[in-house]
Length: 326
Image (cartoon, rainbow, N blue to C red):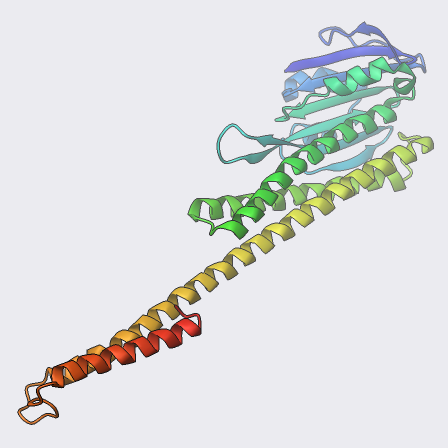
């Protein structure tokens, strides 16, 4: 387990760092707030905190699940939330979205975050709130909003990067035919967007529950903040849906352009086949070993037949050229 930070605050100001190897400090003072950030803890490592803060065992079990979908549930006086984090892995040529989990335990005077697989820690959130004690003094529900908003901002950063890739693919599909590798990348990106949309749906439910349900752990004056969070998640979902529609359009456009190209080639082959069929047919007829055939004894028969073949071929070529088959 990595302890990102464990600190005690009073009236929004840092009082002391907390040693998790020792008993947790008392939270009798209503102005006190305990914020603990953990990364990749095991069940045994989380057990002392679970015992001292009275965390629900079902919530602890969900917090240790790396693949749990987003949700928010009250457990008596405590609130438990799970959010999926996203990160764009650009370590190789095939850019992919990697996922992590952030679980949040929230009481009236404490908040504990447990991260699994997420490359974005909450240090920027903590630094921002520590720099504005008046915001941190608003309580743990404001910290919960700040963490969820930070996670949703990560969605928007990933969507911005994916949007650039989708637009580049759209331009490439219109300028030239997509090869096998580009087509595979297109379908892979579409699959990533589908998975991201499956995460955004439950995240909308989390933001909606914070906004509409009467949760005793969230004060009424926090509604504007969670309404803003809900709008951010909904906007991210709309943008992902738009990117999926754009990729679908790129796939359909690429297919239509390929069909058009194949149609052009087919017409060209048919036109040349028709042109070459004329001399082939005439040569085949005169290549038969019959004694009595027209113009066999005529002095200018050869030149007449060749002339007729050339005239017919030129006429057919001009006709196909006018019809834009050639």
